[in-house]
Image (cartoon, rainbow, N blue to C red; front, side, top):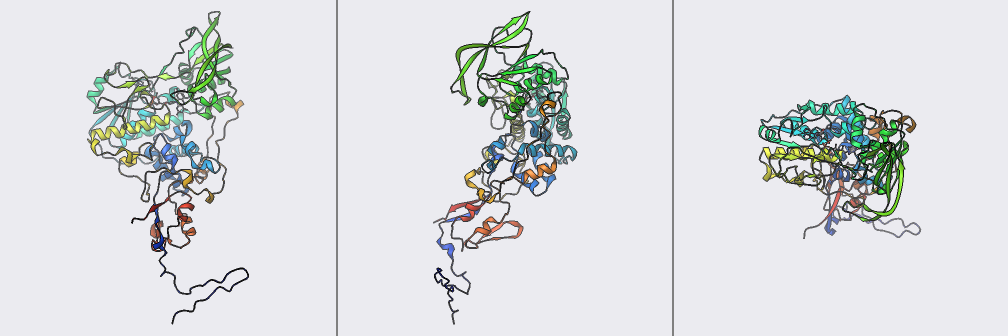
Length: 583
Ligand code: FAD
């Protein structure tokens, strides 16, 4: 006897509806669908945009779960110097952060810095490796060389780094001042590289003290990471007058502990990081500082925060000012004569080109520091290695046109930032490993990348520590995630020293976040592309077709899922993809 079919009581305005007291499982609504959902972890935009190739989403997620040591280890699997990058990286990850559409980007650099500092107090264990017989020489101990050496050591190679300066660190020590990167922080990040068995020999100029050929024949591979240390000249009359100095030479002096006499009025020429550091160092030596730049603020290549800090500390900016000559009085520079520029069309760099207006003006100067860029110079180097005006040409994994020479960082024609140098050093290490193990034919470099970003050393070693569900190498955009599932939470901004106090000394300006604040900030991560088992899909499914299975994943009862797509539309991470049913 079939169950009686009850009807709804028929309250006022509500039509009567037939209801079944028996199971509705017999109605296989899944047969209606032409698209079906599937869980596919995708790539967070921060990961794809990180020049180092850090699994940022991965370590923020571990922090969110309170798994601090695992987060540290995941970070260190890709980046040997997080305390450094947490302080000086230009953090394109934050520009790409989807959270910007909700309130503000996750303060990734600040979390990275806190993790880097924590790793100094609580060092990560050094992974056991199978030692390999081959030895590699790395020339230059800046971030590119140190990253290459670190990853090679983790792959099992013996590595010797040759450095011409008295101490390792490259521009991190010679260029960037201590108020942004305290030397004890840098020393501790370098100590981590040494702890992996890397040897650094300082005071050796390759190409002068030892030939490139000797290195290439003594070692199984060589990485060229010599940076770009020759300051570009303005090429205008009066540049050799006393009082006109290359900004980089001035910074090297200051970073060596000297306090050069500058006079009262200092003019800095340029708009990049070197110019900003010249301005801020000169302010700390008591000068009044004017920065002359030939384009406008929007086109300045310096990190935005550096420009803001320089301005806050008292630097005055004159934009659209192109130096045309230096005038003298009493045998030294007295004024910088500039031509007023206007902005024209975009040039090859995508920035609007400065065009002369013919109008001239002067800026009084006791000292002029020029900082319009640096070029690389390699003494005694092989003539047959392909290069462009910007530096050595390298392939996807750092190979030059002459095996077994690899290269990375500012010595090449790649982007010139600390993060790019670290990422390039890692690529060169993987390239060298691939070369020495004759694995060129079997490598799919794109499979090692985060989206179309940098490669992962962990993936190269075949042990991606983050378990991802049927991953696809596709970057998650803002339209792929449901922001309605989130509430606004203010970002933890870096506390800064008061500017009046900051310009009186070289103490670190940015005080950074505590570990607790950093862990709190990690909670703001949207975990774009990665299922965090938040249950939103299960809650929203109108057919109750989604259920939890052992181990925390979800199962979709496809016999009942009618392909409405609500789970994918509501997923706060963009980790569900709708795909067409096969005919
Ligand atoms: P480098 O850091 O230049 O290191 C190269 C090393 O090779 C040096 O130690 C050099 O002495 C050594 N060397 C050179 N020739 C030889 C040889 N023949 N034999 C042996 N050793 C040799 N980037 C950012 O991302 N953020 C910043 O805030 C920032 N600020 C900067 C501020 C200044 C003042 C400057 C100059 C640069 C700044 N940069 C910044 C850029 C960044 O420092 C560089 O892009 C990065 O250091 C390049 O790394 P690298 O390893 O290629 O070269």
